[in-house]
Length: 405
Image (cartoon, rainbow, N blue to C red; front, top):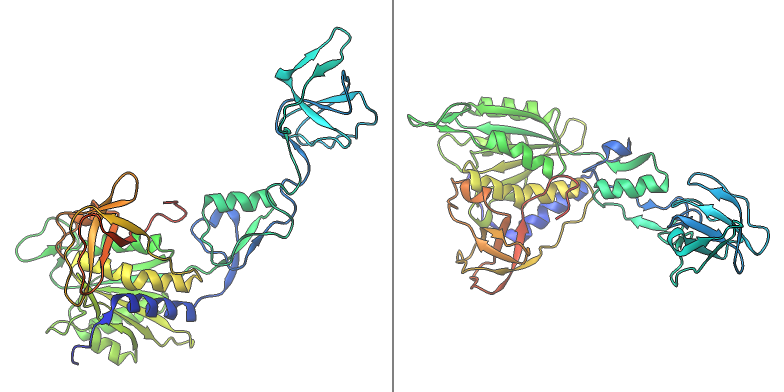
C-alpha cells in the first residue's frame, strides 16, 4: 500500500465528527446520580414554574396592608400557609417558606420592632424579599438543549425541577490495543526497550471525552495474525478501538494490512499535522450491521495524543450527539513556528487569565514532559507562523467529565 495524501487538519476533524454523528447511539434513562459526564438525548424542560410558589428570601414577617400588624401564626419551610384574611394581620415567616396569599410585603426580622402588645412595626425594603413563581424558569421552558453535556450543575437544575432520571445518549464503549514488541509494561527502560506510556494514559483521555473503557490489551505481538486476533476481540465489545503504533508501512507495521483483511473503510488516512501526521480513522463493519471504528494512533506518545485530540475527540463528540466545539482564541505569548504545508499543533500553557498561551518546552513527539505542563495546543495553520502577541486558535486538552473550564 502506498502512502496516501495527508488530509487537511481541520477537514480531518470534520470528517471524524460527521462519522460519529452518523453512527450516534440511542438514548437510555439513568438516575440523576449517575448522569455526570453524559449527554442529554432530549431537551431538559422545566416541569413546573421555578420557583413553583412565592418563596420568602428572608426570616421575618409576611404582612397584609398597613401596620402595625397583629401576628396570627407562623410559616416554616415545607408548609402550606392559610391566606391572610384581613389588613393589619401578619405571620412570622422563615427563609424558603411559602408566602401566604394576600400578603402585600415581607419585613426582615432585623427591620422590625415588636411592641409590648405583640404588634409588629417595620418598613419593607425597596426590593421585595420574595421570589415569584417563574422567576427562574417557566413550566415547559427549555433549560438545556439535546446534546448538552451533563455536569453537577445540570444535575442540580434537573433535581430542582423534580426529575429523578435523565434521558442521555449511550456512552461510547472504547478499547485500547498497544502494539510493539519493544515495549515494557513495568520497570525502567533499557537494553533497547522502552516503557509503554500510552497504555496507562490513553484510557484517561478517552474517559475525559465521554467514553467508557472496556479493555486495555498489550503489547500485541508484531505479527499480522496477532493484530487481527486482537482487533477482532476488541471489536466484539467496543464501538471504538484505539491502537498505538503501526500506522506507517514499515516491516512490522501490520495495521493497514489488518484493516484490509477486516474490510475496513478509511475515513481519514494520515493528516497534514505536525507532530502526529501518520494517524488514521477507519470504519469497520460490525456483525450486527452497525459500524465500529478504529483509530490508529502513532506510537510516539505526543503524536498519539495529537491523534486523540484530532480524530478521536470529534468522533466521540459525534457519537454522543454533541456539537463539535469551536476553538477559542488566545494571544500567543511567544513566537510559534509554522510547519510549511502542515498545521502545527504546539503545546502551550495558559496564564492565570486563560487568555495568553506560552509554548512549552520538551515537546518532541516522543516526549511527554511538555504535555504534562500544558493546557492544550496553539494551532498554526499551514503556510503561516505566529508571532508573540498574535491572536491564534487554541485547542484545549479535555477536562474531567462535568468539570467547567
